[in-house]
Each structure stands twice: as C-alpha cells, then as structure tokens.
Length: 258
Picture 1 (cartoon, helix red, strand yellow):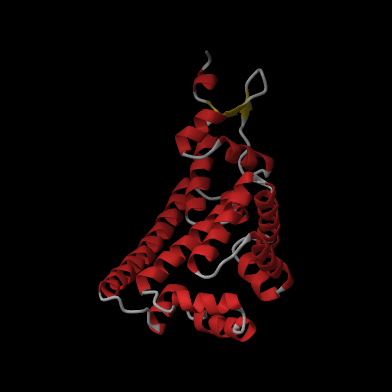
Picture 2 (cartoon, rainbow, N blue to C red):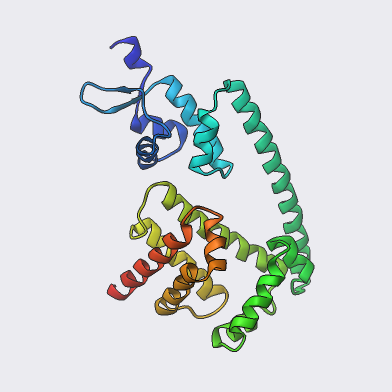
C-alpha cells in the first residue's frame, strides 16, 4: 500500500468521519462543491487530507445555516485556513448569543406556563418577530369567516408562551426537513420530501385546524399562487415554495393510494 493510498479515505469513511451521509457527499461532488481529488483503480472516490479539510469547512458552514451557494463562495475565495476558522468561530459565538437569548425566552415561557397564563402580544413578538401581528391581521381578514380559522382561534386562544415556543420549534424542524431534502438533491416526489410534507400537514392538523390531504393540497397551491407565501419560503431557499407545493401534492397522492 502506498503512502498516498493510506492517506485517502473512501466516500463511506469520509462520510462517517465528518458525520454526513454518503448521498450528501455524492451531491457535493455533483454540484462541484467538493470533488474528491483522487480515484481508486476501480474508479471509486478517494478523499485526500485537503479534501477532508474542505469538507470540514463545508460541514461547519452548513451547520451555521449557510446555503450551498454561500458556502461555495466562501471556500473559493482565496484565504488561509486560519481565516476560515476565525470566521467560523465568530459565527459560532454569534449563534451562542442567539441561543442564550432563546434559553432566556424559554425560561420566561416556563414561568408563565406554570401559572397557565395565555401568551401576550409581547411574547408572540419575541418568539416570531415584529411582523407576526401584521400577518395575523392579514390572515384574519382573508379567512376570518372560514371554519378552519374559527377552529384555529378556538384551539390557540389558551396557548401559553411555552405552547407557542413548541409550535415554533416544530415549524423550524419541518422547514429543516424540507431544506435537508433539497440540499441532498432529493426531488419533491422523494420519500424524504413527502415525509417533510406530511410533517407539515400534521403540524397544521394537530396545532391549528383539521387538515386532510385535500385541504393541504389547496394550501400548497397558495404557496405558488400568492407572492407573499412564495416569498416567505423562497427566502429560506430559492424556489423552495415550488418544491414544497410539489411535495405536498405528492404526499397527498401517496396518502390516497395507501
């Protein structure tokens, strides 16, 4: 065995060492983000130490929430590993500050939950941002006469801040399920995308109003027909609204076939 061979890892070994999936490494190769520098005599991917260093940077930047396009721009900009690590450290420190604030918000929510007090407007603004009440007012104007809106209002009127914190955590998790599928190159008709769509439907069904697959499809149609819905998803990932719409329709077809 040569020195070069001993210093390289197969795609499976590289995936295990960095905590990613083999499918993810294949996708990074396909989009040009991380192409292994060597191949075995049989044509299999082999990752060199330099490849693994680049992969380590990719993994860190992805965990910080950067898109693949943003990661590629950072990695292709000529600079030293020290500069990369300093940038990553600064980003992690910022994330720690955000998490500290979130822990404080949850602690306050727990105190309120113990007294069973419904969430206040200030609580909702803290959890969901400044635009929450504007979006709520717009939703009431559009759907205030619908049964779904009335059922949602009835269910949520007693939600405490802790309840809403759980709602936000669930919403963040289902958005991540969609973005993980997108970043892995999964089509919207894949199991991963349809499972994310089912998480989305169950979140609405369990937290707000009855949402059978047919109603969920109608909601998915709004994501591509209403520019405001489209923008909210496309800010997370480009063309994500269309992806979610197609995944919702695929999941509804899967549900009707089962």
